[in-house]
Image (cartoon, rainbow, N blue to C red; front, side):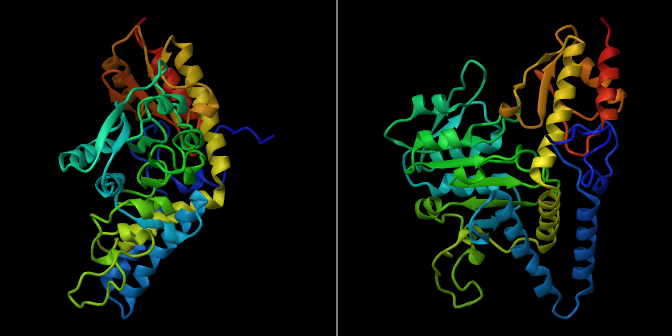
Length: 379
């Protein structure tokens, strides 16, 4: 049995971060590690100096990041990975690349997984079909199975729901849709916080600014062989083709690897930051990170319930990642959010829920701050 987390953050991981006790907003943004900050500063300085050969050296961080991403996913090689600045770019590649058919998309998805399909529909390429969740607000394999038709060419969903933290059964959904439909996954609320069968997806996209803690403008796309075969390279740019540095003015064929999803060269500074963040996750181990998050999540759930709060997130560990959404039925949500802020707790507040997100650097003192805040509410 793994040792239970102590009062601090996860040993070997938490020492790389400096956010204060009370930070529980990782579902919105994960403060980068000191390693990422140092890498960004070092590479920016290298770019500023303009040393001979400096640009070529900076560009090596793209491959470093792609290799680290492939290892984290358990993918075959870096050839399945393309660096992108954010999740939305990858979803637009998928939506505009599908030439026909219908795509099942959860009707209450995060907007980044809605607009690309709407834009593709407006161009007459594919038709998004709203996918209604079950009575527990989950997109399960059974829900997907019931919605499939002969016209369904893909299913697009989040690995972890941004509102409830429900963790999708990617392997089960993969089995249900079969080998000939694409499974498109937005992994941003799960990658770096939990271990899932990521390569069950045909297209996986993520930004690095949340649970991976790589900072903004970092992210990547993974593409399976089926995705490479099915998706047209509508948004492929000059750097995503064969012989991109042969400036002959002619149309070149798309690259045979996932690099075909590149529009232009990625920032080597962002690539270095992403590689550094991914390598820390790899060094510490996603299992250890997930175990610490699970323990802190249990403590937050117990804390919310101890003051009469209503937990909206799944409480079974196999159905959740790091998100705890809740309300306090006896208090206005804005009042609860203000109390948390006054006690030094950073959260995400929406009119119908408050979201707490613990990471492997989250301390027991942070949980105590939440408890004090909620206990202070008028009764």
